[in-house]
Image (spheres, rainbow, N blue to C red):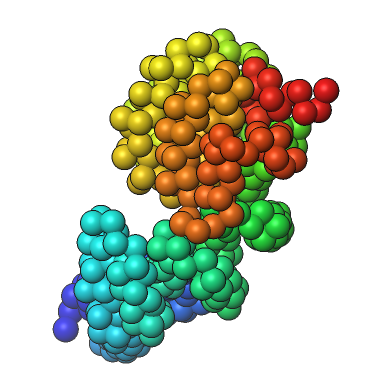
Length: 412
């Protein structure tokens, strides 16, 4: 074999190894830097030996150079075949999950969360055996989300906790961070704000120690939303400010900009700054045109209805919410929708508009997990037989929109 052909074979094998490593890394998050470095080192040795005859002359026979290159290529080929065989074995193990995930998505699309939960559960083990770590964690959290949607509020928190334990065991900081943020939204919808803060605290620590300012900024943005859901406007504003500081330079057309701008719109609305709130909502709409996001889109619909109600367009706001209620269903972090809708419900009662309160309260209740405390809270706030000041939480939520006389009278 000629020297040039031997070098070509070596280069092809090195490229194949790099491709195999990249493919495996996509699934399990393991960069395999030592393997890549070793292969590069072996390749470098082969190249040095290849050019030795040209540099040293006859002291290094060309046949010996070709033989060394072929031996080097053999080592790289062995590593290449090993990685390919690992990938094939894992793909075979994970194959049954494909049908289960398709079944889950079909059940979810047809409004059968119970069947979706069962299908997601079937997908978890094959994905784990196939080391498809990201897809495995997504399936675990999708399982928990489907359980919550089906009203299984006993098992859903346990499935979330198990997903987080699994993420910690995998020990990939980005996968763990992503899982913690998804767990945050599920726990928040289950109205377990204490657990939500615990997950976000862990995500913040992980961001500081092993990730970047971007990751920390996203955590602070989520903390702002959790504070808003708990109707703590001061804390929400502080967390939003820290999110901006942690991010530094913000891409005005990013999802992060959309989420934080929507939060700013709600805070401006709570403070009675209607013009600022409207401007922020317009900015969110422009971001959605560039970066479509079902959560952000649903949040913007709710925020605009809140603004319209405060501005006095109450019939229009109610009708828009009723007609758009189906468009809110694709959102995943639904407590970000439920709480502002409850605030509108309380304001409708303050303005003695029981039909508005009933209709909007029912939309809020339909978005919360069935049988959970968040759904019960939404229904109590809409119930005309229950005083709107029946709990401190209702009083706080009433302050999320300006003009809630009942909430203010309770603290006068």
